[in-house]
Image 1 (cartoon, one colour):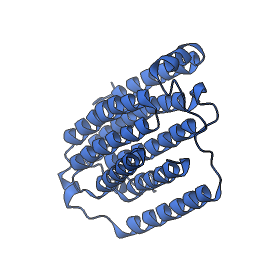
Image 2 (image 1 turned 90 degrees about the horizontal axis):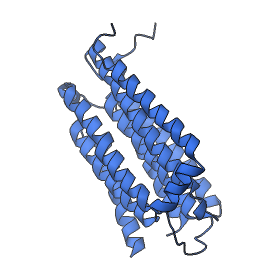
Image 3 (image 1 turned 180 degrees about the horizontal axis):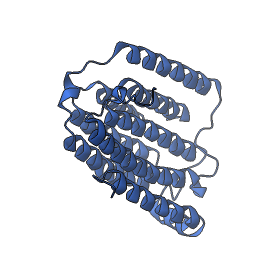
Image 4 (image 1 turned 30 degrees about the vertical axis):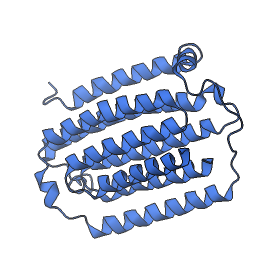
Length: 102
Length: 164
């Protein structure tokens, strides 16, 4: 398996996540799409680490470890925001949250 | 053998990713996300990042997905199932996605990338990773723990009923 395969697969996965984040209107599913995009980026980091000149330095793996922790924090805060939005508007449809439109 | 596994895992991940977007019920979406994450852990194993594959399954398929499922079941989302996807958002979204994929793939195919040079010994193992994490990278590690604490306090505060 060459690096190209992993990069193209990760670009496709990123595209799937982006399509989910852009086309779905439910806030939770937008967050799911963002998680998919983060995963695609993580896979890129690992692929570049594996095919790098000095894999013993482990920088790609460490970066992905930090990135997974930050993604978990992001999911927790995002879902808390969605819960509080739901309390206020009684919906998670992002298109009905247009009170900043003026 | 590894090539076949790569194709199987990547096809499974992309298929489940597409089903996440297309399925009407949010719970089905979350379940397909579990499958997608798990097959991605298989890809991590193929890249010799064994510890990260375990972390991927534990953190994503375990913790984050339980969080998503709890929130989906907490909120009353029955209305979402009947609602159609709006045409304008779908067209603009898919257009943006197509352009991004085109840019990425043409860039990747236009550059020459390195192949694997030699066979490694401690490939993504836990022991050298832990040594690095608690010696050289101990400051980012501690900052990350503070970040997680802040996120936890913020999540509790945001989802409280009244902030008095």
